[in-house]
Length: 370
Image (tube, rainbow, N blue to C red; front, top):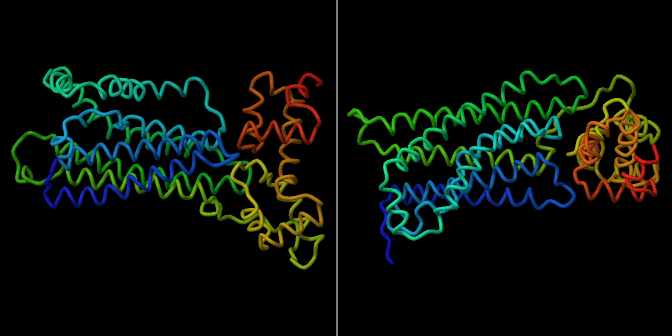
């Protein structure tokens, strides 16, 4: 089948295709990280994938491809109402490291939207055409299109409000997370407000001098910019050195990279005072930055001064923190996995494996012993 499209549609397809590819690729990259299935990373990964699929659906509609290929009507790739709630839950999970059952309320409407599209997306073209002719379904589509920008504005403002109320009182590196998420949310609000305004103008039926303006293309470009913005921040999550820019306090020690004892003293302060091991994004590159030495030098310091590698050294502190919380009785309120996440572990399987190899017993056996 030969499909001819106007130049404006081809431009929209070209711009949108880049955003679709980048967001879906980055989402899969985040979800496929070994030993990093922390809930915040998983939420951001799905947010990127759903954003890319929603943009893909928008491109199919605004370019006229779905009009020419009617079997593409209402295929289940439109997850517009899941983007804003997932973003809010992502912001919240970066600080709490666990989500409670009440947070699932935010996913009720997105699940309903997904069920609707899955229930009709694989039906015949005749059925979809018949459904589209029904006034009730047309009303649903209008409500859905208005809810998207409303959700974006509402949830991003809710995220900013949460960040404003959040008391960052613990460690120097947590301020970096708050600063990043605040900028992330501010950019989301900006694009969300633009999307909301364009939707109001696009659905305004009264005749104006703007009636002939192709606002559907502006909508596509705005949505593409929105997806790009999420992808940029997904890249920062994948490379956390883009997020953590602060330096630890120098007040308790004078750093001389040539003296092993002074490096070890600063390293001890980072772990006991600043507790950087609680940061699930901590890696050798970030630790070496805090110590103001190279990664190679940092690895050498750990091998010679501590006789262990980076993972062994950091996990020892995380296991000690886990044991302390068990002795405090936190396991009566929280699951062992959520406590492990709070102590900096990124993966349940990694935590169980490290705990067993270090302590000789499983976490559950340790709890029973105590």
